[in-house]
Length: 153
Image 1 (cartoon, rainbow, N blue to C red):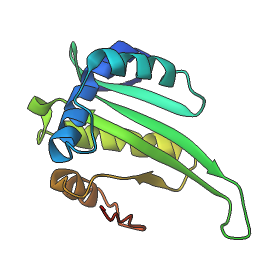
Image 2 (cartoon, rainbow, N blue to C red):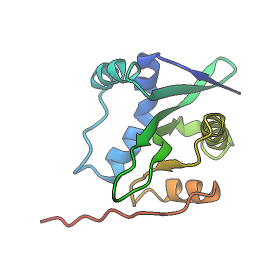
Image 3 (tube, helix red, strand yellow):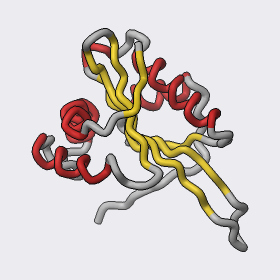
């Protein structure tokens, strides 16, 4: 397997269908249906944005998933200390690759990316109904440090 940087926004838009489709199925009241053309336009801009990194996972000739990372720097304030983290915006994996070690491979690469930059923290979030994501991240040592709650009116 390979983990390589990419700016192939068309590939990312196609691979995004898996994670976005899941979000739409769990929260149809919050997420638009997947639309390749709209995601293509969005990712075309994002791949060149400062401090944003896109990587594709490849096995043989097949791209099986991607990771979208952002290196975040928070200045010191009266409330918080100076802080750096790698924020995982998305990990998307083709459905036929789930449960076969491909997600773990991508997460290991995220950890390597972070360690190479001497950054101590990886942050991410997932939707509360996404039990598979919760179990996956717990398996890889992630712990809750903050919760966001919502009240619908």
